[in-house]
Image (cartoon, rainbow, N blue to C red; front, side, top):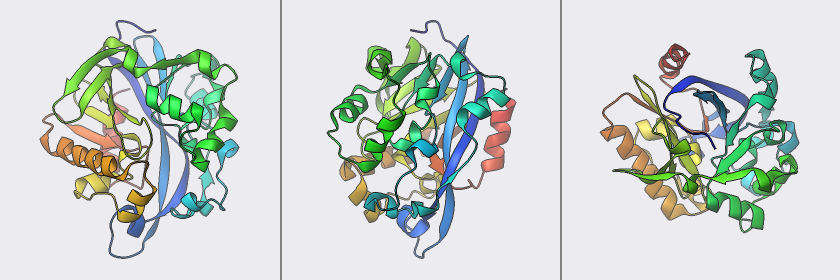
Length: 282
């Protein structure tokens, strides 16, 4: 387990794929507008530890267009980009050097290359892990995820609940990953079982990776709650609304510069501004 991790030295956002989504379904739009939504993974360094948050979307878990839950999002037009391991190698990071893979939930587009990181400890929430292992959630998207599980998956698991607990006035109970303030996990229930988000603290801004608690940053900026069609597909619709409302409150109340970034999003209105800030962190 990593210790004395005080600052985030490096940060980079990677895109491993995309799919088509209809704003009438995802964003409470009055009219249908199909746009491309991207699938993000995050790389960061804390002290000497190399960390990934979610491991991307891959051909190994490409969903079938016959699945009703996926038809909702027009996912028959999935695009798969360059693999996450290949992108990391171009940035001089070998997959075997990754120390930790933090998985925010076990949807297939979050763990597409998990078995490529052979030396990484896998960190997730207790609930997300046990729902996945016991198949209590019979979501076809989750079942596809088993194709990328390392053989020693169970031996490499650590839980966020084993770290030091903290509390946030809006997000509630959280856990200091590696027992430091630089990276804090918070429960984001509703969209997926055991889902977590991660607050990353830098010297001049904060980034909250909210996983699937929101589909796009514009939802939060416009104070839009999840659509009825999304709520019907959520693991727990009532909790999904509560979590989404907390994100809106977080955006409104936080004093330092804060960017809330989902796991998949269309081109953000302030995308260039966000990327410039992230580039400045290198």
